Image (cartoon, rainbow, N blue to C red; front, side, top):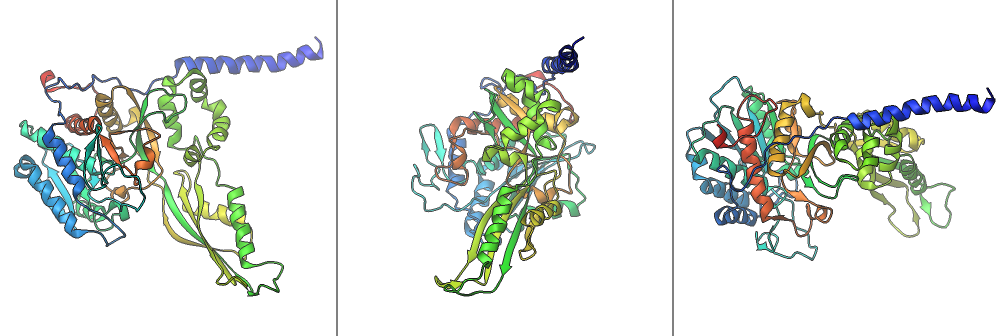
Length: 507
């Protein structure tokens, strides 16, 4: 046998084995999607988006419940809003099954008493406050008008997140009005300062529950939405059900050196040294960790619905992970899923045009990947800066949220997934990493099953509306918001196991 034949045999046999493994795994990779019977407008238990319900959401938007910073908001508007909620849902507020508490003066906690004490309670969370409206032009409707236009409702809070507050209350009102007697106790928690860390709202609610010894089966808060045209290789809508949140770390970099007159500069300056440090951070990003966290499960949940090339790669991450890591790192949006991000948000130095600054300061903001610790991020910064003249100080930090279970191993996740696919039957559901932060951090000790999701559709053109100009929700979507929460309330009202969707007529 010639040397060429031996080489071909040596290379060819392993290559054939790899190809066979890839083909078999692609063909047999399991689907994580459920196919429950959809929620239809003709169902007896369907909540229509009537004029009354739309008017209530519209009124909710008119309350300027703005949070500016911790401890500074709009208390008068919050009081008006919580009074409006009380008056708008008479069945909820008169039911002997429901207790309502005002926590921290402006936050709301509802408890719907269940009959089966063996079932741990669930909690649905949202928040009453909104971010300020900037002076940016371009609003197509006054931002606190709740105006309806061309099939949409406009205003601050329509997607962040008064639609969740009102949708949950509408669902509960509808449920109780039909004479429902719940088996599982359900809490509804509405903080008033989520946009500024939730220190006086969600934190106080969580403390109250903890002091009472409450342990939750699950918690569902606001999060990302049902997306369209978002995931490469997937034609269907994808609902992003977040199982964790990135942490954050703010680092202060400072350099002090000899200053002086601009006419006699030294070889190095504080600004120059700090600039090099910042350049080193940009050129040496935090490690690419794609595939080590929930982003792996995200991809695998979608694999069977992807176009063939994408399906082959995701079904064989044992082989293609390095390629996927490189590809995703090329764009800012997907790069943020791969690693702890590094953003230099402030750089301050100098007081006069002809004076060499004796000090330079920069602020670096990291959003920390769930598989990294705060200390690992700091150590990486120090290593790549590699200059003892640069002082590195931690200003603020929050560790990444614990990763909640997903997929078939988590009945809570599967129940939420089925509830989503009942009202969005044309969508896929996948566990996700929330890149921002919610006030669920205050509930970490109450349950290991914390999920984040908002049941409305957003496309690429809509992402800028979040905290931005022309925040809006479609009338059709708001109908689905109400029905999602109604079906979720039904689906969790028994021991959490994977099961088929039911309507009242099926009982």
